[in-house]
Amino acid sequence: MIPRYSRPAMTAVWSPETKFRIWFEIEAHAADAMAELGVIPKEAAKTIWAKGKDAKFDVARIDAIEAEVKHDVIAFLTHVSEIVGPEARYMHSGMTSSDVLDTCLNVQLVRAADILLEDIDALLAALKRRAFEHKLTPTVGRSHGIHAEPTTFGLKLAQAYAEFSRCRERLVAARKDVATCAISGAVGTFAQVDPRVEEHVAKAMGLTVEPISTQVIPRDRHAMYFATLGVIASCIERLATEIRHLQRTEVLEAEEFFSEKQKGSSAMPHKRNPVLSENLTGLARMVRAYALPAMENVALWHERDISHSSVERMIGPDATVTLDFALARLTGLVDKLLVYPSTMQKNLDRLGGLIHSQRVLIALTQKGVAREDAYRLVQRNAMKVWGGEKDFLSLLKADPDVSAKLSAKELEANFDLDHHFQHVDTIFKRVFGAA
Image (tube, rainbow, N blue to C red; front, side, top):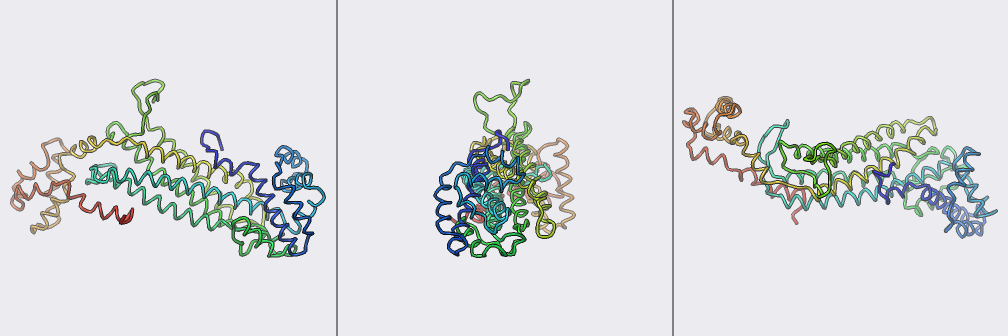
C-alpha cells in the first residue's frame, strides 16, 4: 500500500490496530464458548472481555515482543496478558495460530469486499446516468480500430454497466466463498477444542463454519477471491482503454475532465492527456498480478505450511486497496467525462457513408443478386471512397450494375442513420430492466 493509491476506509481494514482488534475478538468469543462448555471458568471469560474490550493494543510493544519470540500470535497473546492479567492464561486453549490468523484474514477480506461492493454500486450509478444521457447519441462503432457501423455512446456505457453488474455478482459470490471460520486446532481435528467453539466464533464474527480445515482454511477460496478482483480490474482497464482511444487527438469524441488549473505537460502547454485512464490501466495490471500467487497458495504441504502467509500479508492489503482506489477513480472519470456529440457525428460522416455498406449489401441480395456478387459490387465502390473519391452513395447511384437493381430512392433509404438505433430500447431494457 502506498498513500498515493490508498483510501482511508480500505486502508483501515488492514491496519495493525484493526488486525489485533479482530484477533482479540476471535480469542474472546472462543473463551465465551469454552466457558459455556465448562472448559474454562466463566469469570475468566468475563474478565477477558472486560479488560480487553476497550483496550488499546500497543503495536510497538507487540512488535518488540515478536522480535524476541519470533512468533506474531504469541507476541500478541503475551501483550494481551499484560492487559488482562492472570485470566489471560485461559485464552487460546486448544487453539492454534492459524485459527486466529485465517479467521481474521477472512474477516478482513469480507470487510474489504463490502467496501468494494459499495464502490461498484457507485460506478454502476454513474454509468447508468451517463448511459441514459447518451442513449441516442450517434457514434461510430469500430472493429479492429476501424469504422464499422453506427452505434450510440449510450450503448457503449450500457455495455460497461452490464459488465460491472456481472463483476458485482462475482464479488458477492467470492465474498460468500471466503467468509468462513476455522477454530479446529492443530491439523484441524478438533482434538483439543470443541467444534461448538468454532460455531460460536463463526456466528459472532459474521462467518460460516469451514466444513473441513486442515489447521488452515483451504486456499482455493482465497484464490477465487483474488481471481475475481483480477477480473474486475480487467473490466476497469477495458473501459479505461476505450476512453484513452476516444481521447486521441484524431478521434476526440470524449475526454477526461480537465480542471482550470490542471497542467498536461511540463514541456507543452497545449497538452490534455488521459492520465486518469492511463493510471487505471497500470493499476489494473497490479491487481491482476496478485491473482497468480493466490492460486499458487492453494497447494500447501500436507495439512499446512506457511508458504502462503508471506504472500497474503502483501496481496491482501495491496489488491483490495488498489482496486478500491481504481474503482473510485473510474467512477469520478465516468461522472465527469466530457462527451462531444458533434465530433462523433463528424467522425460518422468521415468515410462518406461507408458505414452503411452492409445495408446496401443486404438490399442487393434481397433483389436477387448472389451474395458474392453483391459483396463485389459494394466493395468496388467502397474502395474508391477509401481512395479519396466522392461519397459512397453517389458512387453507388452511378454504378450501372447497382442501379439496375436498386433505384436512387431505394439506395437512399439504406443510408438512414436511425435504422441502426431501432432496437436501442430493447437493449436498454435488457441491461437496466423495464423500469
